[in-house]
Length: 273
Image (cartoon, rainbow, N blue to C red; front, top):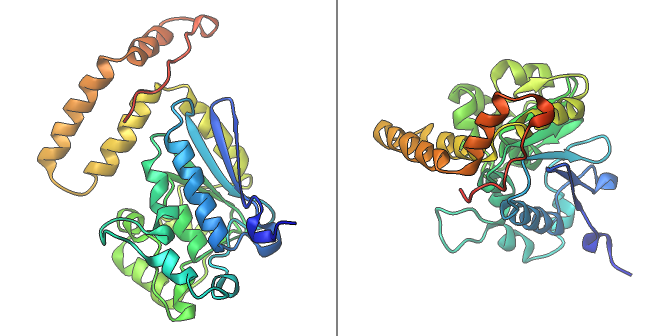
Protein backbone atom coordinates (compact mmCIF):
# COMPACT_ATOMS: atom_id res chain seq x y z
CA UNK A 1 0.00 0.00 0.00
CA UNK A 2 1.52 3.37 -0.98
CA UNK A 3 2.38 5.86 1.72
CA UNK A 4 0.75 9.33 1.77
CA UNK A 5 3.98 10.70 0.28
CA UNK A 6 3.48 8.50 -2.78
CA UNK A 7 -0.10 9.60 -3.45
CA UNK A 8 -1.36 12.19 -5.92
CA UNK A 9 -0.66 15.44 -4.11
CA UNK A 10 -1.09 17.70 -7.15
CA UNK A 11 -4.20 17.09 -9.21
CA UNK A 12 -4.39 18.27 -12.84
CA UNK A 13 -7.55 18.37 -14.95
CA UNK A 14 -8.19 20.18 -18.24
CA UNK A 15 -11.65 21.39 -19.25
CA UNK A 16 -12.47 23.64 -22.23
CA UNK A 17 -8.80 24.55 -22.69
CA UNK A 18 -8.46 25.64 -19.04
CA UNK A 19 -6.05 23.65 -16.86
CA UNK A 20 -7.02 23.29 -13.20
CA UNK A 21 -4.17 22.52 -10.80
CA UNK A 22 -5.21 21.64 -7.26
CA UNK A 23 -2.93 20.98 -4.31
CA UNK A 24 -4.29 17.80 -2.82
CA UNK A 25 -2.81 17.45 0.65
CA UNK A 26 -5.81 18.76 2.50
CA UNK A 27 -5.12 16.79 5.68
CA UNK A 28 -1.82 18.72 6.01
CA UNK A 29 -3.28 22.07 4.88
CA UNK A 30 -1.45 21.56 1.56
CA UNK A 31 1.93 21.95 3.25
CA UNK A 32 4.84 21.10 0.97
CA UNK A 33 6.77 17.86 1.28
CA UNK A 34 9.36 16.54 -1.17
CA UNK A 35 6.79 14.54 -3.15
CA UNK A 36 4.65 17.63 -3.58
CA UNK A 37 7.62 19.69 -4.79
CA UNK A 38 8.38 17.05 -7.41
CA UNK A 39 4.76 16.74 -8.49
CA UNK A 40 4.41 20.52 -8.91
CA UNK A 41 7.56 20.51 -11.05
CA UNK A 42 6.20 17.66 -13.17
CA UNK A 43 2.84 19.43 -13.57
CA UNK A 44 4.56 22.63 -14.71
CA UNK A 45 6.54 20.68 -17.31
CA UNK A 46 3.39 18.98 -18.60
CA UNK A 47 1.58 22.31 -18.95
CA UNK A 48 4.58 24.04 -20.50
CA UNK A 49 4.49 21.58 -23.40
CA UNK A 50 0.71 21.60 -23.89
CA UNK A 51 -0.13 23.88 -26.83
CA UNK A 52 -3.90 23.40 -26.45
CA UNK A 53 -4.43 25.06 -23.09
CA UNK A 54 -5.29 28.77 -22.87
CA UNK A 55 -5.14 29.41 -19.12
CA UNK A 56 -4.15 27.74 -15.85
CA UNK A 57 -5.95 28.07 -12.51
CA UNK A 58 -4.07 26.96 -9.38
CA UNK A 59 -5.86 26.40 -6.05
CA UNK A 60 -5.71 24.31 -2.91
CA UNK A 61 -8.21 21.65 -1.90
CA UNK A 62 -9.78 22.24 1.50
CA UNK A 63 -9.60 25.40 3.55
CA UNK A 64 -6.07 26.56 2.68
CA UNK A 65 -4.09 27.36 -0.47
CA UNK A 66 -0.79 26.19 1.03
CA UNK A 67 0.67 26.67 4.50
CA UNK A 68 4.29 26.47 3.37
CA UNK A 69 6.98 23.89 3.99
CA UNK A 70 6.10 20.75 5.96
CA UNK A 71 9.28 21.04 8.01
CA UNK A 72 8.69 17.84 10.00
CA UNK A 73 8.23 15.78 6.84
CA UNK A 74 11.17 17.30 4.98
CA UNK A 75 13.56 16.99 7.93
CA UNK A 76 12.85 13.26 8.29
CA UNK A 77 15.26 12.74 5.42
CA UNK A 78 18.87 13.90 5.65
CA UNK A 79 19.00 14.28 1.86
CA UNK A 80 15.73 16.21 1.44
CA UNK A 81 17.21 19.72 2.06
CA UNK A 82 19.98 18.93 -0.44
CA UNK A 83 17.40 17.84 -3.04
CA UNK A 84 15.53 21.10 -2.57
CA UNK A 85 18.49 23.47 -2.64
CA UNK A 86 21.03 21.79 -4.93
CA UNK A 87 21.61 23.29 -8.39
CA UNK A 88 24.29 22.80 -11.03
CA UNK A 89 23.97 26.39 -12.26
CA UNK A 90 23.73 29.05 -9.52
CA UNK A 91 21.65 31.38 -11.71
CA UNK A 92 18.95 28.78 -12.46
CA UNK A 93 16.09 27.57 -10.28
CA UNK A 94 16.57 24.62 -7.95
CA UNK A 95 13.67 22.34 -6.96
CA UNK A 96 12.54 24.72 -4.20
CA UNK A 97 12.51 27.67 -6.61
CA UNK A 98 11.01 26.02 -9.69
CA UNK A 99 7.63 25.66 -7.95
CA UNK A 100 7.46 29.46 -8.01
CA UNK A 101 9.44 30.50 -11.08
CA UNK A 102 8.26 27.60 -13.25
CA UNK A 103 4.77 29.03 -13.79
CA UNK A 104 6.31 31.84 -15.81
CA UNK A 105 7.69 29.29 -18.27
CA UNK A 106 4.15 28.26 -19.20
CA UNK A 107 3.14 30.42 -22.21
CA UNK A 108 -0.41 31.02 -20.97
CA UNK A 109 -1.76 33.12 -18.08
CA UNK A 110 -1.54 31.42 -14.67
CA UNK A 111 -4.16 32.49 -12.12
CA UNK A 112 -3.59 31.72 -8.44
CA UNK A 113 -6.72 31.37 -6.28
CA UNK A 114 -5.85 32.24 -2.68
CA UNK A 115 -8.25 31.15 0.03
CA UNK A 116 -7.42 30.44 3.65
CA UNK A 117 -3.75 30.36 4.58
CA UNK A 118 -1.09 31.22 2.02
CA UNK A 119 2.09 31.21 4.07
CA UNK A 120 5.80 30.96 3.37
CA UNK A 121 6.35 28.57 0.49
CA UNK A 122 2.67 28.83 -0.36
CA UNK A 123 3.03 32.55 -0.98
CA UNK A 124 6.22 31.95 -2.97
CA UNK A 125 4.20 29.65 -5.25
CA UNK A 126 1.39 32.19 -5.57
CA UNK A 127 3.86 34.93 -6.49
CA UNK A 128 4.91 32.83 -9.48
CA UNK A 129 1.50 33.28 -11.12
CA UNK A 130 0.51 36.06 -13.49
CA UNK A 131 -2.55 36.96 -11.41
CA UNK A 132 -3.50 36.36 -7.77
CA UNK A 133 -7.16 36.42 -6.75
CA UNK A 134 -7.68 36.34 -2.99
CA UNK A 135 -10.58 36.13 -0.59
CA UNK A 136 -10.93 39.14 1.74
CA UNK A 137 -10.16 36.98 4.78
CA UNK A 138 -7.24 35.11 3.21
CA UNK A 139 -4.23 34.82 5.52
CA UNK A 140 -1.04 35.80 3.69
CA UNK A 141 2.50 35.91 5.01
CA UNK A 142 6.17 35.64 4.09
CA UNK A 143 6.61 33.25 6.99
CA UNK A 144 10.29 32.27 6.74
CA UNK A 145 11.44 34.82 9.34
CA UNK A 146 9.59 32.87 12.04
CA UNK A 147 11.94 29.95 11.38
CA UNK A 148 15.03 32.16 11.30
CA UNK A 149 15.28 31.76 7.52
CA UNK A 150 15.04 33.92 4.40
CA UNK A 151 12.60 33.54 1.48
CA UNK A 152 14.48 31.24 -0.91
CA UNK A 153 11.87 29.86 -3.30
CA UNK A 154 12.11 32.39 -6.12
CA UNK A 155 9.33 34.73 -5.06
CA UNK A 156 11.79 37.62 -4.82
CA UNK A 157 11.69 37.90 -8.62
CA UNK A 158 7.98 38.70 -8.48
CA UNK A 159 8.11 40.85 -5.34
CA UNK A 160 10.52 43.32 -6.92
CA UNK A 161 7.96 43.96 -9.66
CA UNK A 162 4.89 44.06 -7.41
CA UNK A 163 5.56 46.03 -4.25
CA UNK A 164 7.86 48.64 -2.74
CA UNK A 165 11.16 47.38 -1.43
CA UNK A 166 10.60 48.69 2.10
CA UNK A 167 7.24 46.92 2.35
CA UNK A 168 8.76 43.67 1.05
CA UNK A 169 11.55 43.93 3.63
CA UNK A 170 9.08 44.55 6.46
CA UNK A 171 6.92 41.58 5.53
CA UNK A 172 9.94 39.31 5.10
CA UNK A 173 11.75 40.42 8.27
CA UNK A 174 8.72 40.34 10.58
CA UNK A 175 6.68 37.45 9.19
CA UNK A 176 3.57 39.63 9.60
CA UNK A 177 0.30 38.03 8.53
CA UNK A 178 -1.98 40.21 6.38
CA UNK A 179 -5.44 39.62 4.92
CA UNK A 180 -6.56 39.82 1.31
CA UNK A 181 -7.66 43.44 1.53
CA UNK A 182 -4.27 44.55 2.86
CA UNK A 183 -2.50 42.46 0.22
CA UNK A 184 -4.50 44.25 -2.49
CA UNK A 185 -3.67 47.64 -0.98
CA UNK A 186 0.08 47.02 -1.23
CA UNK A 187 -0.10 45.34 -4.66
CA UNK A 188 0.60 41.78 -3.57
CA UNK A 189 -2.59 40.42 -5.16
CA UNK A 190 -4.53 41.38 -8.29
CA UNK A 191 -8.12 41.12 -7.06
CA UNK A 192 -9.99 40.50 -3.81
CA UNK A 193 -13.46 38.98 -4.09
CA UNK A 194 -15.77 36.83 -1.98
CA UNK A 195 -15.61 33.96 -4.51
CA UNK A 196 -12.06 33.84 -5.87
CA UNK A 197 -12.52 30.65 -7.90
CA UNK A 198 -15.58 32.05 -9.66
CA UNK A 199 -13.63 35.19 -10.54
CA UNK A 200 -10.68 33.10 -11.76
CA UNK A 201 -12.90 31.05 -14.09
CA UNK A 202 -14.52 34.21 -15.46
CA UNK A 203 -11.10 35.71 -16.15
CA UNK A 204 -9.85 32.48 -17.75
CA UNK A 205 -12.86 32.37 -20.08
CA UNK A 206 -12.20 35.95 -21.21
CA UNK A 207 -8.55 35.08 -21.86
CA UNK A 208 -9.64 32.06 -23.90
CA UNK A 209 -11.47 34.41 -26.27
CA UNK A 210 -8.21 36.14 -27.20
CA UNK A 211 -5.63 34.94 -29.70
CA UNK A 212 -3.46 32.40 -27.86
CA UNK A 213 -0.42 33.69 -29.74
CA UNK A 214 -0.92 37.31 -28.69
CA UNK A 215 -1.53 36.29 -25.06
CA UNK A 216 1.61 34.12 -25.00
CA UNK A 217 3.67 36.85 -26.66
CA UNK A 218 2.41 39.50 -24.23
CA UNK A 219 3.39 37.34 -21.26
CA UNK A 220 6.87 36.75 -22.69
CA UNK A 221 7.28 40.41 -23.70
CA UNK A 222 6.44 41.76 -20.26
CA UNK A 223 8.42 39.08 -18.42
CA UNK A 224 11.54 39.87 -20.44
CA UNK A 225 11.13 43.63 -20.70
CA UNK A 226 9.62 44.88 -17.42
CA UNK A 227 13.10 45.28 -16.01
CA UNK A 228 16.09 45.84 -18.29
CA UNK A 229 17.15 47.59 -21.47
CA UNK A 230 14.64 49.89 -23.21
CA UNK A 231 16.27 49.10 -26.53
CA UNK A 232 15.81 45.36 -26.14
CA UNK A 233 12.20 45.91 -25.05
CA UNK A 234 11.45 47.89 -28.23
CA UNK A 235 13.15 45.26 -30.37
CA UNK A 236 11.11 42.48 -28.76
CA UNK A 237 7.87 44.39 -29.39
CA UNK A 238 8.61 44.60 -33.10
CA UNK A 239 9.84 41.02 -33.44
CA UNK A 240 6.97 39.45 -31.50
CA UNK A 241 4.40 41.53 -33.39
CA UNK A 242 5.79 40.40 -36.73
CA UNK A 243 5.70 36.78 -35.60
CA UNK A 244 2.06 37.17 -34.56
CA UNK A 245 1.02 38.86 -37.81
CA UNK A 246 2.50 36.00 -39.81
CA UNK A 247 0.46 33.45 -37.87
CA UNK A 248 -3.08 32.21 -38.48
CA UNK A 249 -4.53 33.30 -35.14
CA UNK A 250 -4.20 37.03 -35.83
CA UNK A 251 -6.33 36.57 -38.95
CA UNK A 252 -8.86 34.47 -37.05
CA UNK A 253 -9.11 37.11 -34.32
CA UNK A 254 -9.64 39.84 -36.93
CA UNK A 255 -12.34 37.74 -38.60
CA UNK A 256 -14.12 37.08 -35.31
CA UNK A 257 -14.13 40.78 -34.46
CA UNK A 258 -16.19 41.56 -37.56
CA UNK A 259 -18.62 38.63 -37.50
CA UNK A 260 -21.42 37.42 -35.26
CA UNK A 261 -20.55 35.16 -32.37
CA UNK A 262 -22.18 32.12 -33.97
CA UNK A 263 -19.93 32.61 -37.01
CA UNK A 264 -16.71 32.77 -34.98
CA UNK A 265 -13.81 30.56 -36.00
CA UNK A 266 -11.81 28.45 -33.57
CA UNK A 267 -8.22 29.45 -32.92
CA UNK A 268 -5.51 27.05 -34.02
CA UNK A 269 -2.99 25.68 -31.51
CA UNK A 270 -0.63 28.25 -30.08
CA UNK A 271 2.75 28.77 -31.70
CA UNK A 272 5.82 27.87 -29.66
CA UNK A 273 6.92 30.89 -27.62
